[in-house]
Amino acid sequence: MKVKVVVFGILRFPAENIELVLPHLKSFVDATREKDNCIAYDVAEDPFDKGLIRFTELWPDRESLQSHLNADHVIPWRDSAKKYGLMERKFSSYDLSSDEIPV
Image (cartoon, rainbow, N blue to C red):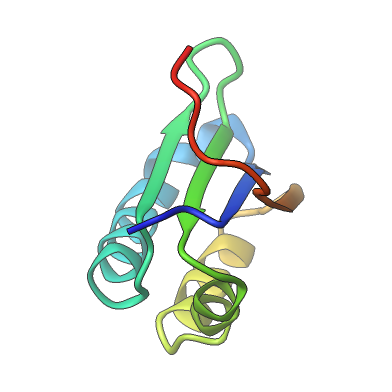
């Protein structure tokens, strides 16, 4: 499947809440990978900034991304994020206009 849309994002939680957030994040990521037609959906806590979670998403088209944003499993995740003190959320998407170029 060809990548046409890439998303980069961050969420920031209080460092002391990160262990409480992770089980909810795992459920959300598992559902996204299983149901939302993503090519890749990668999430990791920044090892140098406790509480910062980075997202990298690859999508075949804008429609798939939009469907993901409206999916049923997004609402429980957003509720959990608020419950555990979401402090910052920044996501940007980009349309790719060329084929993959290995580096």
